[in-house]
Length: 537
Image 1: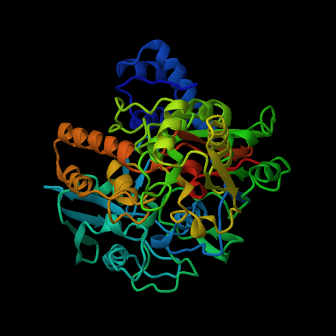
Image 2: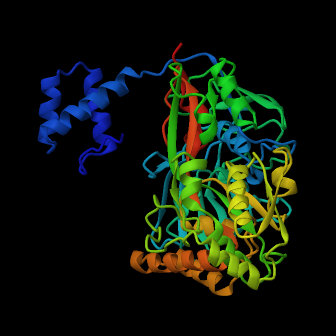
């Protein structure tokens, strides 16, 4: 159930009420305060209850926490520019900081930056927070920001956000605590873009990332790629509050049931991204809580346009009609999802094209299209893995629907280990699993522009590329919305990425773990949970 507060009520007002409670204000005093702000009596009572709960949940310092994600490999990295998996993001968010941070309301907050300002959305001035040091004692300056951002432009680095960073034509220090960023074209989204995990700030000149030296809330004690990491509290952290844990250990348990069993047995305090099937195991367990976040995460069926069978006319359109979206939503994901329309901008995003309807489940229409493509009766491999959330179950749904019309799909279940390096982006028909991104520009730049590093179906369109640049630069919100709506139609109709649902992420945790909140960048508080949670035990 969602608690709705009055539209004129803000996070600052929440903080004001919580502060008043801490100072000993009576309920009558608090209600007068709320009513003077235009809050109705009934709503005021609800707000007081929420504020009281927030005050009661006072963070405690100390303790060692163990958490398990769902994917890792021997290619795990502590280089933010190269991070690919959730385990990479979580470790990097604990060790480093960003210039900006995206809070649970999707609002940009300053982190290593004190301010980011521009008069034309093209030339930006970034004022940096003073008094910040790296784990080794080195003072944080503009040189670190210039180095960190320029790394994404160096092809030799292999940054996963190179296509996004290319818009930065100049990153230069104006003085020790001021950076100037000039973009090729205006982009009002820059403060949001800088909140992405890949844009974490590292020390000037860093070439060895094995030590994870950053400005972050935790310092690296141990890192064994593909196995585990252990980090300890940074005693000199620059923020007034946090972190609260003495240390935390992070590793991956790819099998969902095994991850949940580790939680139930007390071996870990957090089991990240529990799938719908395994969620049954925690229902009714008094020692376990869940946090559900629907932020735009999805598992998609990728069909490469440059390889058979995707290169055959009619096959992809047939697949769009063969995917039973409602069955995937209700049976595979147990209702923890929203129906998707084959493009990546989810319903929580203000630019979501709500008029774009998904293809109807129409097996006979699919059969005709497969026959036209000359594929009816042939065996088509589909690569799936536990590494991509619910992909094996989704593949089975497609396989069963195909069998009823004489279309054979060979579901090739492959191990999680090595899936992202050996099959994703490579196999002719395979699954992906995309984490939430806060803007259409980021999604399209990473996944659909002609030079996108993760162009899963090899979709290429000069018109799409030019529209991406146009939308990025306009400050006219109406025009920008129109462009994004058309781009979503292009992806849904012409790309080979089938997105049947937007999945709700479910993190299961011990009731002793406190402070977890939703975040628009995805589960585990947008992978930044370590800094904000505590153990109440």
